Image (cartoon, rainbow, N blue to C red; front, side, top):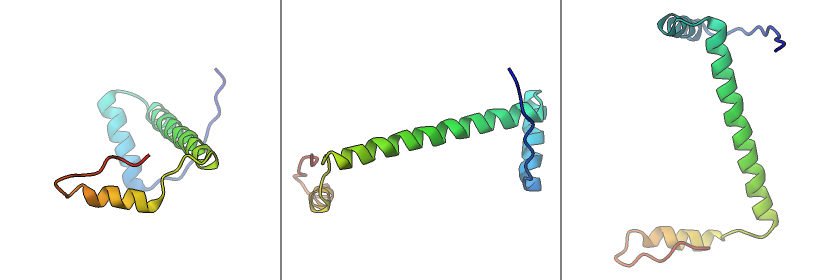
Length: 86
C-alpha cells in the first residue's frame, strides 16, 4: 500500500498522550495517529450518511410536526402517555 506523510501541529498535551499510548501499547506514534484518524473519518462518513438519509426523509415528507412531538413528550410524565407520533 502506498503511503503519504502528513504533518500536523497538535497541542503538546495531546502529543504527550499519543506518546504515552504508543508506549503502553508498544506501537509507533504513526500507528496510533493512523488508528485515530481512521476512526474519526469513519465516524464523519457515518454522520454524513445519516444526515443525507434524514434529508431524504424530509424531502419525501416523512416528518412529524413539532406539536405532535411536544404533545408526546409532555405526555411522558402523565399516567397515560400517548403513543409515539409517526
